[in-house]
Image (tube, rainbow, N blue to C red):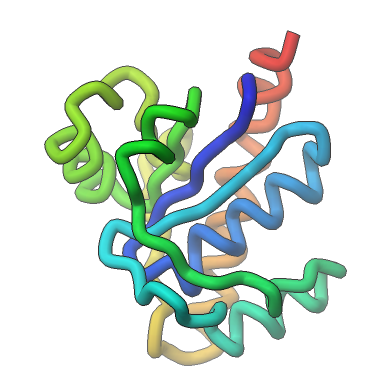
Length: 145
């Protein structure tokens, strides 16, 4: 596996946190993030930065980017935050079918969108993302060999 692409909507909350948490857990696996409706050029949301600081992760350098055909082609595994995002990615990039899954797939869960919401929702999103990353670690590590 050459990398994992995490996808959310704006690319300022969920997918950058997910990519960062995956990188922390499996440093040998490149993880990137993008948004289906990215707030291109924006930095990570302040609460996302704060909650990742607690984990020893610095999201300050993150700059939101829009999902591109090249990113989708180059990623052997794409983990989106919701079922709707998976469907959108597969409709816009039909060649992605078979490698697009929800981060919360193992728990049949869409990751809550904390954008412009309070601390509680951000903390819930982080907990869901952490759980999703943990559930995918074995599969991702297994594909390395």
